[in-house]
Structure formats: C-alpha cells, structure tokens
Length: 63
Figure 1 (cartoon, rainbow, N blue to C red):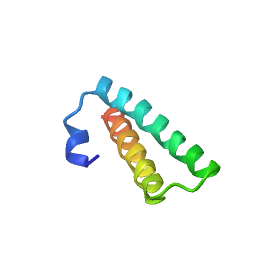
Figure 2: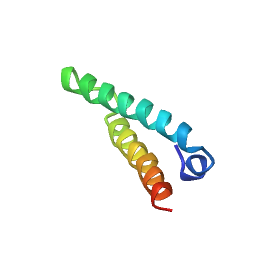
Figure 3: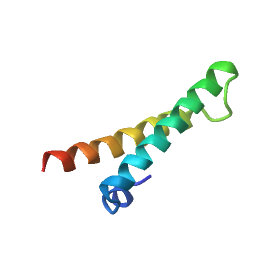
Figure 4: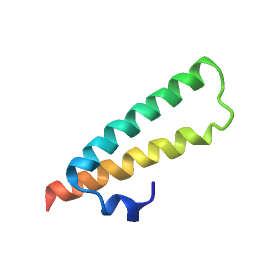
C-alpha cells in the first residue's frame, strides 16, 4: 500500500486497514514458521505496510 493511498483514507478506515494488515502479517509469519513461504519478502512488505498505516494514524492524532 502506497503512502498516497493511505493519506486519502479516513481515520476509521485507517483503523480497519491497520487491523487487516496486522492479521495478514501475523498469518504470513505463522505460515513461514511452519514451512518456508515461496516469497519471504512478503513478510517485510507486510510489516512496512503496518508501519505506514500506524504512522499516519499517529500523525493525525498529534495534529
């Protein structure tokens, strides 16, 4: 998910997206722990997407 897409979402949508991304990240980590996934770089991109959304939420709370 790109930063330009994140900026256009509302706070409620960001909260929902954050929970979805965290679940997807946890699922990827669990799948990789059981047996190696085909593309382990998916884990990195999922983690960074979670961080982008969380950062945007924090930024909006501080304004």
